[in-house]
Length: 170
Image 1: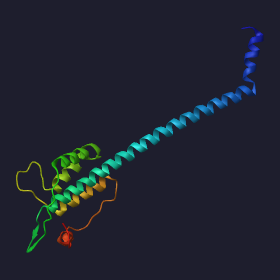
Image 2: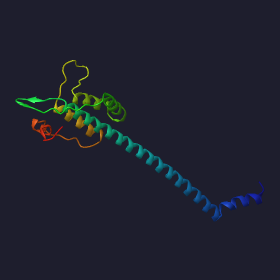
Image 3: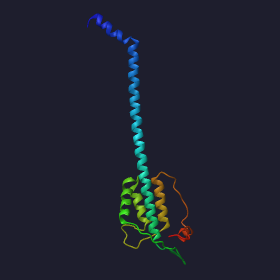
Image 4: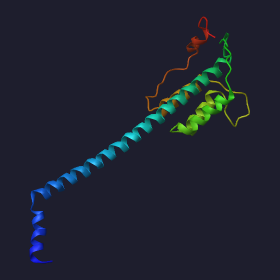
């Protein structure tokens, strides 16, 4: 390089226009990076929200199934018998709920196990179905855990079965 071209080359670095262009390029690059980062975070947030909605829907559908099972189950304590309000449901729906629990839940094995116990299906045991309000409570606690909600606690007394004795209840 000749002395004159070398001087011209280095003079460009001393020009305010060069520094303005450099700053503009850096700001633009940083802005594009931030925009890309925010877009990625936004997509992840939307995906997490969609997943949470699907999980919530699956869990509440399962709670309705548990209610149907218990509506078809007579409970006797002492002299009192809870009224039965039979309601049918499709096995295909039950399979769909199982699949959605397995896919959308954070803790699928625990959730499915507590669901089995809540409906009286202990799986490997060959004895009669065992129904318990405690098992329903265990499933509700698992639902709260799945949805990151506070875990609720209350006693399992028979007087909560007032729902089955409502006038006009079917």
